[in-house]
Length: 227
Ligand SMILES: *Cc1c(COP(=O)(O)O)cnc(C)c1O
Image (cartoon, rainbow, N blue to C red):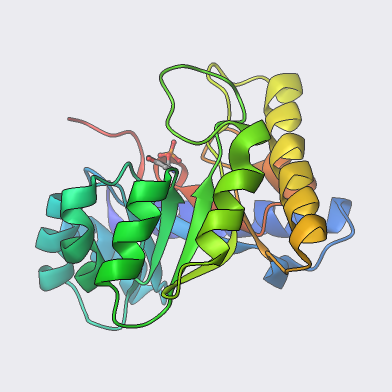
């Protein structure tokens, strides 16, 4: 995809985010845009960087490691993919935020290996699809409670992947469930979990209307993935 297309896509996505915020009575700066760059080469990522973008996401430790060393150091990287416990140490060297904490052994390993409190999101499986990672919504509070007692994890919110195939009704239902799960955990433990990471290229508008504070987009900006 050429730089002009990426530039236009980025501008279009930002204006759609702003419109969705306006419809929902929210301010556009309440929603951050994480560009998910898995499978896209460093040159493509650099185009978005040169346009001023600094927030990027990857779903694999190895792939991220290769890109991080080829790109400027002032990028903030988020881990959005399934994380194996034996890769936590490497992940902590690469990522500022881990969005995919979905089980206690992983959370414990992050806390054990981290040298500072790492912002993390609880990944929740809101669609019930078996192919998806994430803790069941009804169990999220138990995991949250345990994570809150770990010294070097800072739980800042929840993350989910919308259902596939995408439909407005099912997507909104999943996103509302993430929001309600977050609200319930906040209330039960008297804490603040400001981040709701939900919405990808095909469903981010509904996610924003349902309260997303971060949308994770790849194809909407960089075009189709060829792998
Ligand atoms: C790939 C990916 C995205 C972005 O998906 P697109 O459909 O390209 O927008 C978002 N979140 C996660 C966890 C992903 O793996």
